[in-house]
Length: 140
Image 1 (cartoon, rainbow, N blue to C red):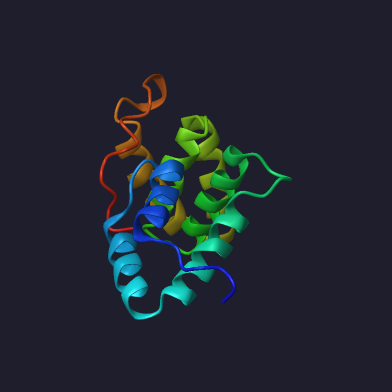
Image 2: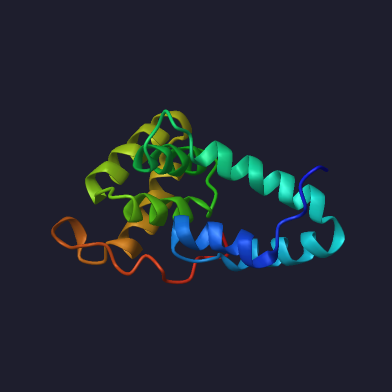
């Protein structure tokens, strides 16, 4: 590669800046990957950040899309992107609408996962504010 590999701190900062934390599963992957093949990990993380920070879309939209896509996959990583969407200004109503779109394509499993994630992030329901989005992830 032309560019030197990223450091663990640089890569972890990308997650902290976007989500508010470094999910444990990701922290393990980054640490191991940088030990084994730092060029591949750096390339993948550069691609990830490029895809998640397009000039054509604002961060809230990117994170709402990511949340919905991961709900369709019934991935626990959807919680990380819900946190990032909240950090970017998304409301419970916007996250719920995104979940409804995901449910259209995945079914009730996507809505069930969304309900679990959103009730954790908004413990007081529609009238409440999001809880601290820097709380530890569910291994996403």
